[in-house]
Length: 485
Image (tube, helix red, strand yellow):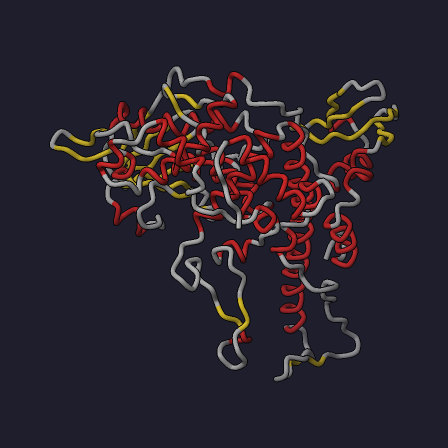
């Protein structure tokens, strides 16, 4: 079993973290650090940046010290208390909106089609697009990565090899057979760490002269949304679905103008308002659309006709299981009417209403609140939420590994002479043998673990109190007559 902690010890730590205690006192309190030469300093631990530890000295100065120069005890402390160092996030920096000046695309022919490479992406395509058209398509990918380098979370995934992988398909059927959902302009497949997209829904068509871009008006929001999942891959396993999807929606709503993201506050605010206005616009007749202007848009957003959203307090506490079920918990059935008396509720609910747009919009607004309205304070809360959840998930992975090791050890034990497995699942063995010891306790609920850091996000308040405050702040800031149910 090695030197891993037992789950019983980890469970105590999880209980402290889940209730909001332990992190600040354990991690951020000043402690004595010792280098390999024996020199000692008293400093606060701020996290790691690459191969360095960020330490806050007594006078307030922040110093970056190489892990290799610190004692074994200090290295053990850092390993046991993983924490990423982040500079204070006050707003999007000016260079987050920089345009892509030049984009080099290399093309090569492969057995299965064509491969195009840019600085950070490798595109495998089953049709010949050519470097010029590929340069235009790849710009959104490179711009999105460039934006994420400045993002509030301060986390950027690393590609499996030298570049992030994407596959582009000339036919929708091929895209769908590769795993792309129906009528989507792109999708990220986490298990494969690959992005898929159909060219037809990227404004590209085949003509007698080859593949050509036929429209500059295609909506890139789905691509940016899915790229956000790819570029923040680590978050997918450590944060609840509502926060991952809300963050991807937030990034996807940032306007792109003149081939660059516009990250000033007013533009991001208008991007959110456009999400609601555009959704309504698409439901209008052609005649109504022709009469739809700025005044009509503003009147609609203030009218109270915007479809109701989900309660913020409810979404804040929503497990991945409930999210996947359209925000509807599994409901008990009358005895004998189904396995274990549970009735599955579809995301469309009993009246056929698709509840998923409500969840996406509400989660989007929650992230908008913390990042845009609370600013530095809100981003710090999100980062604490992430750090606590990551430690919880690390302990879960530790338990899972312990259990896998135990299963392997048991299989080897069954092969020893004299060991007999009985029909009821028990086994007999000679008195001179000792069977492997199973990990202590039961595995925790991953759904609960992903909400373990919620108290840090709520800053010790209840979800109902924070939820009400968020809803009121959103109505005021966005000037939209929003209702939450």
